[in-house]
Amino acid sequence: GLPLSNAPPQLPRRQRGLPEKRSIRDVQKVIAVSSAKGGVGKSTIAVNLALAFARRGLRSGILDTDIFGPSIPTLLNLSGEPRLSQNNQLLPLSNYGIKSMSMGYLVDEKAPVVWRGLMVMKAIQQLLHEVDWGGLDILVMDLPPGTGDTQLTITQQVKLDGAVIVSTPQDIALKDAVKGISMFNKVDVRVGHTIVPPQGDIKFTVYVLDPRHDSEYGVVRECANHGIDFLGDIPLHASICNDADRGKPTVVAEPESERARTFMSIAEGLSKTLGI
Image (tube, rainbow, N blue to C red; front, side):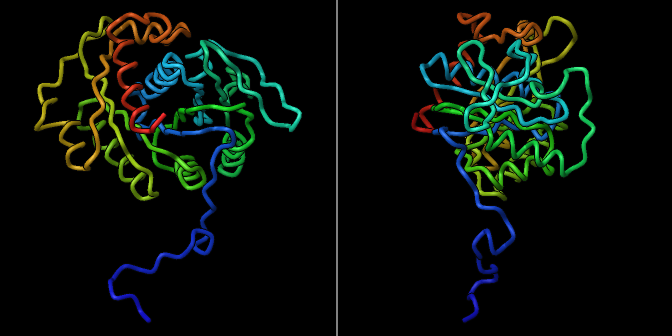
């Protein structure tokens, strides 16, 4: 008979024309780090989280899914084309105790990637399912800005264990962060945490700490509105930027600093949530 509610019947993904979600081979847990907006420190946070997981004794890796502007090679001070395994799979490049894969390893760093959608999707497929990770406890997936084809391909084809949304306190960044939350909710991915690099303590330009960043406004408010956890503040300190630019992220460059301890605390919270 007809359904009693106004909701349409839920057909299997394949009958709805959607691909079946697959796990990434030899990877226990996968989290996506997203911002839906560029320039808020997402890649820097993603790589420091991956390094923090490694410092906790986990087999950690990071996958850079930004085809047009890959950042992970610079952040990890890595270059060179990956070798192939006996099964014709890409072998990750490693540094500081974590494994990594990026389009930046497959093209010249000075060459722009001028591709149409089909070529981009083919590259994403290769990064998702043709990498031999060799066994990981956790893979941090650094998503490109936005909520378009790349993000939909990843969220519809990969079994994600959660998502981390990165934002700054300004409304202009928060609006895009909320779009990212909505995207993950639509594709049934648990959005567990939002990380905020608050503006302040920056040496090379002038910023004012957002006076609305409290329990009634900004990111904390949006977390409450959407029923997700607020994971913490990461200070947008000049040292974090300098460490990233020289290819030695803060968790490695300044492991005893307050900034590194913040990353470690966030990684610990995520590990407990994920059960690893």
